[in-house]
Image 1 (cartoon, rainbow, N blue to C red):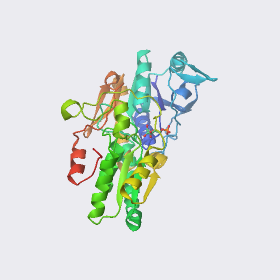
Image 2 (tube, rainbow, N blue to C red):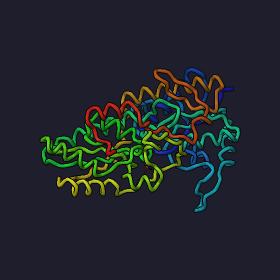
Image 3 (cartoon, rainbow, N blue to C red):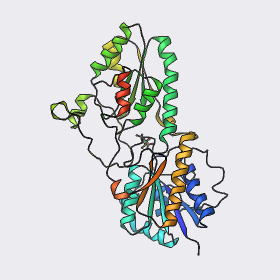
Length: 369
Ligand code: F6P
C-alpha cells in the first residue's frame, strides 16, 4: 500500500512556501509513489480535519505563486482558542494523524512551527520540517526560504527612497520587518546603501545616529536613509530589558537563545518616534515609510524557488529513508537533517562580529552604537 504523507504550512506566510509544497509533493508522488494530503490553515486545520488532496494537478502551476495554497495560521496544538477558550488540542491532532493513516507529517514554518512540530514528535508522530521565514532567524540552518525575496523587496524600497530623499534633502526612515533578528534590515541596508542601519542586536543611541546624519550633511550630503528593523531599540529601552549589546569590559555579549512564540510583539510607533527625534536633533525634515507586509507578498525570487525546491525534494528523500524528528536545513549548496531538539527554543540572530556588520562599518554605515 502507498504511504500517506500530510503537509501543513504554519506561522506567518512567506514567499517560497508553494515552491516547497510542490518540491516535497512532486518528489513524493512521482519518485516514491506516495500519496499526499494538505491540511488547511496550519495546525488549526489539522485539528479541525480540513484537508486538501495534493495530487499532481494540485501541485502544478504553483511554483511561482506567493503565499501558501494551503493557508496558514499561528495556532499552536497545545494552546488553541476553541469556542473562546484556550485549550490543548494535541490529542485531536494526533487522532487526525491516525485517522488519515499518515506515515509522516511535514510542517513548513519558522521558529514557532519548529517548536510545535517537536511537540507533536514527542507524541509519537513522524514529523519532519522545513525552515521558512523572511526574518531568516531559524536556528541551525544557513538560510530560510522567504528571506531572499523579502531582501529584494526591501532593497528596492531603499533604492526608491534614495531619489526622493535626495530631491527633498530629507531623512527617510524605512521600517523593515524583523522583530528579534536584524537580517533583513542589515542585508537590505547594505545592499541598498542605507546610511544608518538599526537592528535589534545592536541597541542604538539616537544622538549618535543624529551625529552621523549631520556629518553627512556637513560633507554636502543633505539626505540620509535610515533602515530600521521593527525590533530595533534605543539603548535606554534595551537596558531596561537587560539587552546592552555588550558584555562586561566592553566585550561583545553572546546572544542568548530565546524561544520564538507565534506573532511578533512589534510596538508600532517606535520608528515614528525615531523619525521625529532625528528631525529635532538634526533640523532636517524627516519622513517614515513602513514597508510592512509588502515584504512577505508576491512571487518568490529565483533564489527562494531554488532553495525551497531543493529543501522540499531533500525532505521527500528523507521521508523515503524513514528519517524523522528533523528539520531539513540548508548547508552551503547541500542540505542536512538537523534534529528538531537542536532547533527549538533557539533563534539565529545576527552575531555582533558578523562579517556583514564589519563590511557595513567599512563603508561608513552607522549602527547607532
Ligand atoms: O515572523 C515573520 C514576520 O513577518 C515578522 O517579521 C513580523 O514581525 C511578523 O511576522 C508579523 O506577523 P503578522 O503577519 O502575524 O502580523
